[in-house]
Length: 365
Image 1 (cartoon, rainbow, N blue to C red):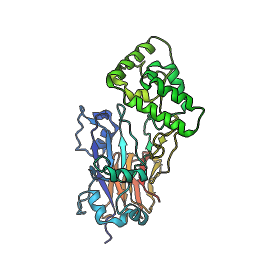
Image 2: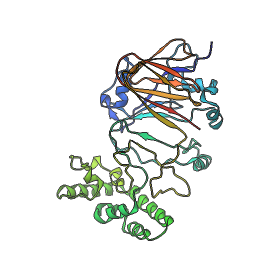
Image 3: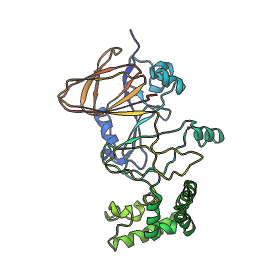
Image 4: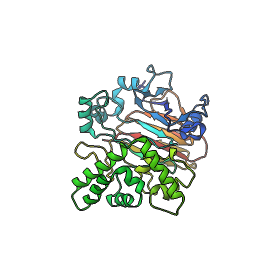
């Protein structure tokens, strides 16, 4: 009998402080829907659902016929399941981590190095950069969501510096002047000026930031202004106080915000030559996320074979899954996660006449 190459997973939840609380979190709701025994703590954040073989969140295999207990252990002994190109390119490891995020407050500012810089930093300081791989990311919105990615056009930043005195105070007159003057110079001058502005903002003392935010809140609450994103998206007018709008709020005046019509974004990589990107430049990622929508009138749907291992998340619907290697059908409903080995197809039979919504992560080289 052929070895089992398709099986359900129980995935790890990360309870970072910025996540939504309890059943308000989509992560918690997916967990509760897929596992009737799951107990959701309403006073704890459910920030991320990790679907993969990461050492800090290796998914458990929900199949008693498989000896290995986690996905990482199974892949280590069944590397051919990754697909020939993926196996050779990524040294026999699953090269992506599929996640669902449920965000309540702003995440920390992040900059991921590209492959070349990641390898260099790993050699120089492995305690700070334990991974020699780059980390290209793609975010897909399941619900309306706002993200900051890269830098907005310099002309817009200069406008904010002119109209928002609290912002210019934190940037500093010298850095602000440098940025304004860079408009008439080349891209290297712009990058250098952006670096100076961003560094000044991020290195501002917390006390000074709080003071300027208090002034900003007081000023815009007393006048009808649309000088910055904080005003135009009603962040302040909603009654929030400065403790809820900190440096990330001010970063809206530096950062590019994808159009509301977009449902995905690609954070740009950080290179040694150009650590401060002046434009939003989507990279070509090593991975793919497929969105699959199937009307409830369809009784059976086939997930096609790929030359890559993949992970499938069921967001809506209820099905039974069967494959040529599975000893029995697999029940899959909202929140269910399925690992699919390379070159394996899966037949999904709808058990309820409701539409299916699924996402499938893979690596197509």
